[in-house]
Every structure is written in C-alpha cells, then in structure tokens.
Amino acid sequence: MASAEGRIIAALRDAGWTVATRPFSVTGAAGYLDLGTHRDGQFGPTVYAELNGQNVVAVKEGRRPDAVVIAAHHDTIRDSPGADDNTASVAALLELARLTAGVHYEFTVMLVAFDMEEIGFHGSRAFLREQIDGRSVRAAIIFESMAYTSENPNSQMLPRGFGLLYRKQAEQIRRRRRAGDWAALLYRAPSARLAATFAACLEATKGPDSSVLLRDPADLPYAGALLRRFLPFARDFGRSDHLAFWERELPAVLITDTADFRNPHYHERTDTADTLDFKHLRALVAATILTLDRVAQRSPA
Image (cartoon, rainbow, N blue to C red; front, side, top):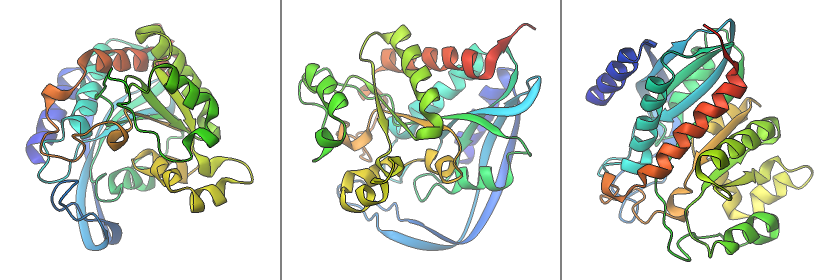
C-alpha cells in the first residue's frame, strides 16, 4: 500500500495538483473480511478493533470552494492483483489529473484515492466525516471496477427481478444481445441530473447505448424500503464508496462495469491488466472531463 500510495502521490504532483495524505483511524469498525479470492475466500462480516489508513487527496482550487469530487479506491483484496478492481479506476484518476492539469474551473475539484473500500468503505466515510475541509460537495463521481467489457452475447448477467423493476433498461440490454459492453451509472434522486449529464457525455465519447442508468431501488418513493428488504440484488447498489455520499444525501454517481455481474475475474487471481478494455476506459476518462466542464464549470485562466 505504501508503494502504491507513493506512485499515486508522485503522479498527481507531477501533473501539478496540490496533494496531501489524510490519515484516519477508526475503532470498533464494522466491516468485512477479505481472506482469499472470491470463490474460495471468507467475506463474512466482522468487527475490526482498530483500523489505521490514509486517503490521498489532490486539490485544484476553483473560484468557489464547493467541491466536485472524483474518486476511486486504491486497495484490493489480498490474493488478487486487482486490475479491474480497482487499479484501472486509479489509472483513470491519474490520467484525468494529467489531462486537466492546465484547466481552470469555477468550482474546486478534488481527486481522491480512498483507502479500505474492500473491508467496509472506511476511507470514504472518514473523508466525509473529517477531511472535506469545510467544503460542500457539489457532486461526486466514483470510479469502481469499470474497465472490463465483453461483446459476447449473454456476457452480461441480469439478476432475477431486474426486468420487472427496470423494464426500459432491460430492453436496452436485450437489444444488444445482453453483451457486457456498456457502463452502469448508479444514482439516487439528488444525483439524477449528474447521472444524465455523464450518460450524455459518454454517448459523445463512445456512442449510443454506451451506458445504462439505474436508480437505486432503495431510493424509490414508497416502495424503496420494501424492495431493499425483499429484492436481494437491491443491496448490490451499495457496494462501493458512493454509499458514504448517499448516506449523507449528497449527489454521487457510481461508474461501474457491474463487477461480478459481468467480469469472471472479479476478486480472482486472474484479475490482470490483459483482461481489460482500455478503449472503454479511455472513453470513460473523456466523458468525465466533459462532465467536469459542465459540473465544475470550466472557466478562463
């Protein structure tokens, strides 16, 4: 982790961003085990007596202090190289820093590499609890397991009940023969506009039907609580650092390839760089830059 953090810090600084590490410590922390790989490991709930980690935070000050946050966790589970989960997302974050080095924005932009996502989203919660420096979060885009695609028919798994809840989206996926070659955008009501903006920007960089917008079932009026209780896949909407923002009713969108609903290498020793789609990753970075232009509001120097 120290080596990874050093490389992240160096890349962000080389791009001209102001960078700091933000240590955090939590005690009695509810979380998850990460022993072994997805198939043979132990991933049950646990309580950690004490956790000590640190986030890496890069800042580009805008004319206004309110922040647009772009983030990706930089840990993986033990025994997995973690190319898709989540090294590719960190690489995208660093490329974003390089490409926007000379850009000025009306609002402050923060690029964050979160620690300890895999064992319970502790880094993102610490960031919002202690380290936002008094700024309001205008928007957050979270990169998570987003670089694996497949053009093969039926490579995208849809959980039972998906079509009943998301009829339009299910039809969109079926028209593409259930190929897993698109990005899922997970959002709640406060981030609906942000999700739609990102979807439009990704269509501009990759083409039609390049994303599927999915509102968290738990966020649906009246039926949300019941859906989360009785529809098992509804709980999969809270499996990354965007959850920390949603818990505080902040506008956040998760960008993902749907992880184990598509990628057979998820949490496995085979999650290596040669399995990834770098053209897709490039389109996501470009879409993020276009989204930043709109949400953080690109301004003259």
